[in-house]
Image (cartoon, rainbow, N blue to C red; front, top):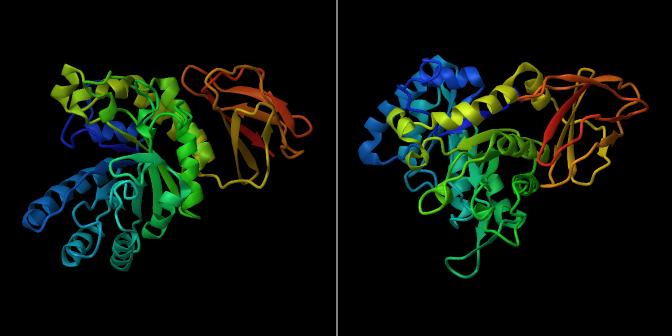
Length: 388
């Protein structure tokens, strides 16, 4: 993996300006660490020419800014009934340097989309364009036997869709009133750690395919008449790392474009710059800095590090004599020091990577174990780096 995708779904208008920096909006989000931006294109034969023109304009802008576009194929993504239009779109855009990935049918398991049609679309796209992955994103719920009802998501519900994509994923937006409404509420986990639960389901269902997790800025369940509520920086940061520890190899953030969730000033600018300023930008800056990027791109290690607290989940990465331990405290209430064991004997001096409000600090492993002297709070995440 050469890049850990960090995307906005959807991003600010292509021709807009970031209010704080005065930079072109797409330059601003790229400099903060975003790598991808979604275009939610919908294709029909009658509008193909106009749509291709508009999409090419966005691909040009993305390329200039150093971004890649995750491009939807809505209208031609469920089967090959419009194969000639699918071919026309893919052939017209596949060589553009601003293209990053194709987006297939949205939430197909929840929508009961027949897998066979999606597998056929995937096969056709791969034949035309072997260089860009097709991505399918699932909902956090599955259809029930009773029409109009849903049940908690399961591996079996989404596994049939894995052969229809190169990257599989899930969207999960748990910050709401009451909590966890997007996943269906009780008996499903209603804590924000449901993000890790849903990501693990997709990892188990998808074989060796990469998994992308789409996280919350805003969604329909926090729009009027529901209470408008956004993830705080602490919540957004925890959910990002909870997904990463669970196996996500890319993160997208949904809802910055939803007008009903914006302030009056942001509506005039066309995007939720208030949320960007307070939450999204500092989170992306952290995830995309040089130290964190190395951790996120490093392969999983055979080393098995264990935490003394059962609510602390761990992912271990290793490359070229460096070991990273990414840890998240999934409990909503636990706090205290955590003891980590199982490191190689050669691990000695280590670093806790910096994150918002917390500078980098040193610690030491002895005999394959270490204790972080700082209490590990609920819904917190830390990245430890050791040179072996």
